[in-house]
Length: 442
Image (cartoon, rainbow, N blue to C red; front, side, top):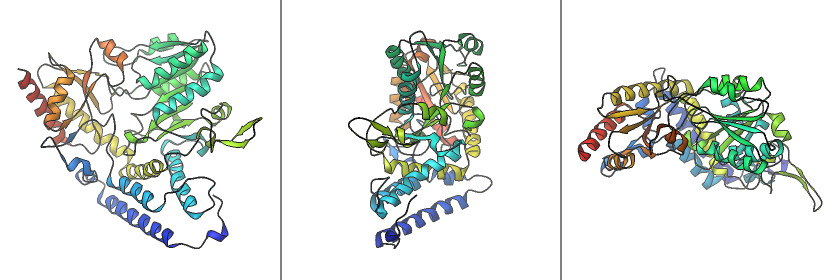
């Protein structure tokens, strides 16, 4: 970043900022020191103050991580430090505070690039979340490339965020939406996928991990197959990046999306990864400040990537917080997180399968840490309400995946989504709560 020699001397505010950052780093390093080769999960759980509270007079059991994960103290402290000592608008500011804010905000881009192994920083676009990322691609790429008679391929298990934007652009351009079906285990029918691909297919958009079923889809196979016909592929990775190692170059994905708030970061911040050659050819999604090069009343030219797609003042504090969240996850280790969550998933599946009149919905051979289930004769909302009275937070309803519920002909499910800071006691409390629900409804 360009520096100005006349601003090199440290002010009192900058010295304070440096001390705050130093203290936060020391605190994080101390936490890391405590994480030995055999990870101390109890110590990690203590990093999340929200888990220490009571809800409705009972210790909180938080099993709604698929909707939003909790935030460790280091992330909230870092955002607080930004608000107290660094707050300024980013990019192009010549004063030191703006430059410090820009550095802190842009640090997330470098860390995301390394986290998912993107080819360059230009391929990392800041958005407000996965939904915004998908809308960006649908509107920018779709409007430029789709026409009447073209087809967009999605799967039956998509989140609404990976259905509705494609429906909207299809209606606008005259393209049609085609659906990859799934079986009753919640697995995509890959033979049907192969059969649906044709010269009319102009985009494949598929979820990496189902938020409602936990199914891990064979996205590498999907990408490779689509690429044999030169069809681009967008992967909704909102439920994958927080729980497993994702390498976008190894996958070959053309577009990959995810959100900060599902990986110990703040809400309102997300990532669109896109191959540089595709992003360069796409027109801007929104207009305004920061995404321009030169503006006249006759014509406007665009800024270089990634800023071409980042109009207006961004959620700076959220970006700074996400940068620290990535540090936090990396210190634990994505592989260790995946292993721990798989252990808890197997433990929960074993316990729930022993409960009479309980049916797990979504039994794919490859699953992430999500268990959706039904209790015979009890509506999911009623069951969730009773669980909440006992301090147990699960999600109920269709989980923004109504086509899945239509497939199983059910109104919705109860969903327990597990994170690495959960433990076996949380699962046991859930089991006890389910038995209380069954007793209540007799």
